[in-house]
Structures are given as structure tokens and as C-alpha cells.
Length: 84
Image (cartoon, rainbow, N blue to C red; front, side, top):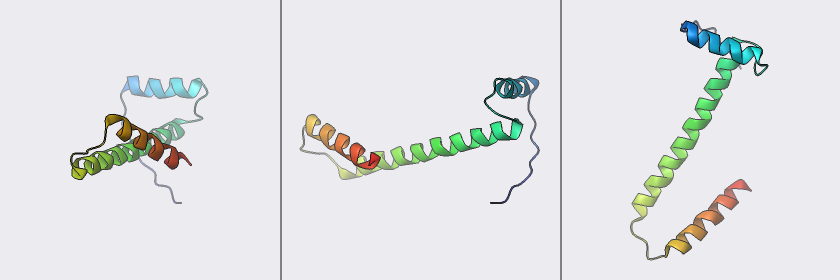
């Protein structure tokens, strides 16, 4: 995987925040901190897209004759199956 060098502009307050995170031992340098932020944003976006798709599937499926308990049980079972 290649790397690309970027130049970013931060406020003094943002720069100090990053330096504080590094000083606390969570990261070794600015780049590592920013890469972590990008990874977390990617993960959050993937979760958002999954939920958005699930909501759309629910809307597309129409009204159900099942009870709330039956729907809940099925949702819990699907969740368990996804986790392995």
C-alpha cells in the first residue's frame, strides 16, 4: 500500500489537542493520530451505511403481521448469526 503526503492546516487549539494525545501515550506522532481518526470515520461510515440499508429493507418489506416479540426475536437471532 502506497502512502501520500498531505499538508493540513489546524487551529492552535486543534494542534494542542493532538500534542496532548501524543503526550498521553496514545499515539507516537501526528500522522498516527490522524490516520486513526480516518480509520474510525471509515468504520463509522460503514456502520451508518449498514443501518441505512437495513432501514430501507424494512421500509421496502411493508407492514408485517408478526408481533413485536416475534420481530424482536428474529432480529436478535440475525444479530447472533452475524457475530458468528
